[in-house]
Image (cartoon, rainbow, N blue to C red; front, side, top):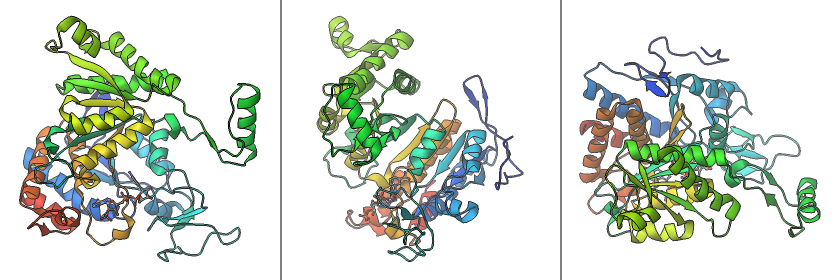
Length: 449
Ligand code: NAP
């Protein structure tokens, strides 16, 4: 058992454990949760009762989640001190309990020294000192600028796969004519690529040294007034991601895994991602996969039963494909930056980020999360759509093997949206809809369970 500085785990409930690679979930698992900043608390207040009610309905009281609040962002600095946005306790608890769920967290954009965890505004200090209050909203919760908490969580816990299922819910307004044709699960590499944090600010001695090194040692010219970033993509990072994506596709009877990359330009990073992805597929799943080339060379384009097709697409082409031929794509695996873009673009295609769930996973740990941000202008207004976190909760229930509860929520949410009882973001786009508060939407889903 981890020794916590300030956390007191619940007296009831049991820890999730593993037998080999297999997760073992007790009937009363302890699950840590982070409410999140901005609208996070509103969303969590709407979400938790939905998850509890669905589990109670599905298993007649036999199973129950024992929630354990842990802290990051604003609530962390309130509990642990002004500059502790991601306490060691939080990381230890997620490691110890293996499955956790979180709301959105404020991330500073850069350039400024301080960030307000209530409204996400950024500002310089007063001389060398911390500002007394936020220039925008007056909050006293202005902390020193930090790297993204989400990136921090992913890197510290080595949550290498960001998993984002994207599909349409009937009735949700969206910009395309046939949104039901898109049903993909995106596996985005989470720990490397340009997100590795190896960046040198323009004009600093480090940037100058890098530019000199590139010129003198490597024979590459970079403009002297450049900032410089590094884009590492490794065999390890690529293969473990592609392995997870293929395993998921096999476990869920999916048709294909598409490796998306920009290998025509970045040959040794993006192009290598494609090559190592195919290599892994052949090395570890030879009897269960067929490559797109083999499909046409050997099988006349007809997929042999029990196999999935491994194919690849160039990233810019893929953005067209998901619009023009969405039903040809199923599980999709990408490096970090393109994965970030494609996940949001696909979510927008089926009606926006308010309804897009996500998870960050390692081999053992799974952290489920909202995919939108903190939507700070709605903080405390009980107004935003809790759908993304509720659906992340359904991913979590499926991960626990509690698919019956997850299914109930998905059906109930579909029914609630079908009844046109929705939060402001959907209501403003739906004719004749009833506008519900965040908490009311949660209650409406419970009524429909
Ligand atoms: P955002 O918080 O996602 O909000 C942008 C807009 O998206 C909102 O103003 C709202 O649009 C809409 N929106 C977001 N969540 C919604 C919800 N649940 N229901 C309905 N509409 C929703 O993006 P941002 O303003 O760029 O970022 C704010 C902060 O969140 C930043 O610090 C950012 O770094 C952080 N962030 C965190 C995460 C995360 O924790 N996973 C992800 C992204 C961003 P309307 O105003 O049009 O209604």
